Amino acid sequence: MEFTNLPTFQPMTRIVIFANGNLSEPDKLRRRLRPTDRIFCADGGTVHALALGLTPELIIGDFDSLPPNLMAGMKAAGVNFQRHPARKDQTDLELAFQTAVAEGVDEILLVTALGGRLDQMLANIFLLARPEYASVRLTLVDGSQSATVLGSHQTLTLTGQPGDTLSLVPLTPTVQQVNLSGVEWPLVEATLTFGSTWSISNAFTTPQATVQIGEGMVLVVHIETNERLSE
Image (cartoon, rainbow, N blue to C red; front, side, top):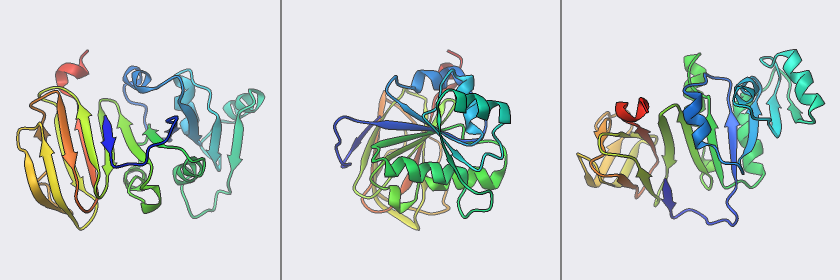
């Protein structure tokens, strides 16, 4: 996955945030992780990080979904905690996002954020579209599916294989000057509208697909083919 028209930082840093959703296809998630990743957990997301053999750098939340024995173990291991009251204006995940962005991070990978309550799942997805995160590369991963926010004057190149699914989900009332190549139904200077399904379920025809946005914001969803799912 490659971006253009985003700020360039050296060295590149990435924080992986574990939410308290479902852990899908853990082996695939392991392969996406880098040795240099910093691990943050939103409350009960700690359980998923530990299931992958990862010790978080920081656990954030009100700790209503973190088992007491795990909390004690993490404290003994020297893990940092950021405690918030149960009655608050943000979810634990949003607080984790705010903390990661305040760290000056270049990229955030959100994992284990889907499944469970519909309201929480939708809120987790729409967190990616917050304007204050526009300078950060944001990707949500769930098994063989990934979703990346693409904003005005940005270009994203995805690497996959022919047959992979690619969908564009508008996040603003209109998304203008949309160019899409490397797919079965390419777009040239197209306009997408919020709520439309016109740009859903396209398909890779080459190993790479490129999306370019003029004005607006879209969620670019890449789903690997069944053949790759069975590998």
